[in-house]
Image 1: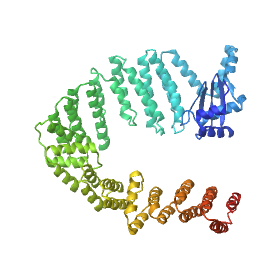
Image 2: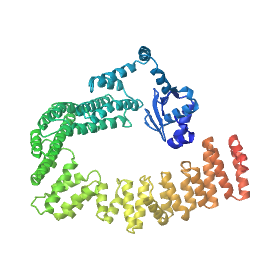
Image 3: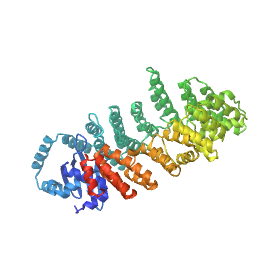
Image 4: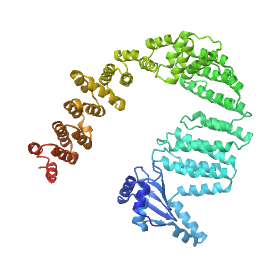
Length: 632
């Protein structure tokens, strides 16, 4: 292995990771190290109960892998390399060991392996696994036992990366089988990995970083790449295994994609039968309906995927039209057959059902109406029905593309004003204001926002921005003040401009009121910047409420912008609060005192620093620091 420098390690891993790895070496966290060729492997202690397994390869570049949550190029990799550089004798040289073993006879090797197995029984299963797999093209029972060993017990957050690393070794067997053209064996192995991965989720694995989930999805993808190479009977034999997995999997692992891999026109009837029998016949209504909807959606998508639109209709009829989802599914199948008018009648029947919202069905209602009216096709539009569906569709939040659909229908039938009236009188308030802004009814939007007692401050700011853009400064000021009063806390460029308008245009009473509503440092800084020209007294007043949320450099920055009197007042407030809060602020306080020294006149500074030293004479460390930089 070539020599390596610390600078190379810093460059490869970054300064922060390098520093943490160095701490690990100094604290003796590297347990075991092995050197083989240009590779280092070993175990390093970390925050998990068990040590992490680390592998480093040093060629022209440095690459490391680890079973910790980071996974690669981590502090554990740095620690292993630094330990090698520090004490090479602490590493086992595998090259020398292997050369030594080559000189041993068979009986000696058997004794060595026997002793190792007695010390590390887990290795016995690995040897057995390797032997069993090599006896045949693939031995699923042996692989299953190996996977069981990897996934045994509860997998907490720290155990997942290591488990997935071992599962990837198993998956590589499938990858090699696929490369060699043994597609059936590869498919079986991928399916087994998916099944056992889902079992791990069922058992409560902590996959917070999504490592195991990504692995399972990768197995699903590789399953589909290879299953298309199988014959019809082989695909049919996989159906029930896949549906059993899908039935329990609800973790976003894309397992239903495997059905699209095996589904054909020849086996879809068997697939349909298998799926339909999995719809629960009893149980809690939510559970039954959830699984019914999920299975019917999947079956409908499979028929559409195979281009069997008529069969999709048949299945929907067989399942019955009970819920809005059923009507949506049935209408979609009719549209695929080119039966748009018939589909619309089912959409209309579906939206009339008394159950909760179904936005997809409501949107389809307006999509079809727009299409029919645009094509001058005869269609009955029931105004009250359309208004109710529109209000339902707009009830949660405003989406411009959705509103465009709705508006298009009402404009085509000449009832736009009636739509706006209904939204203003019956619609949710924020949606009504959004519609008024969208359609340039600014005066109505301003009036609604000013009079409202429930409108969210962000929505009020949105109206204020629109008013400012149209030159309505007074309205913009009123709305900005109202938003502040109701707790608006976020600052951005538009808000800064609105606050600037408010500061410039407000009288003394309004300005004091506005400052009183400031609740966050971000808004305070916007006000302070706006107040610098009008009233530095008010600028300091608003900043003083949030001084300890501001860094030293920010304080120094404002000190440069303020006149001497106000700069000193603000700096004094910050220093006084900082030194009384904690000794960790002493260095920053001294730095601010230096800034004050530059601002104050000589006599003024003498009086100030003498009084400050007297007030803080009990803080010996602070006094030493001040004397050390000759501020007194």
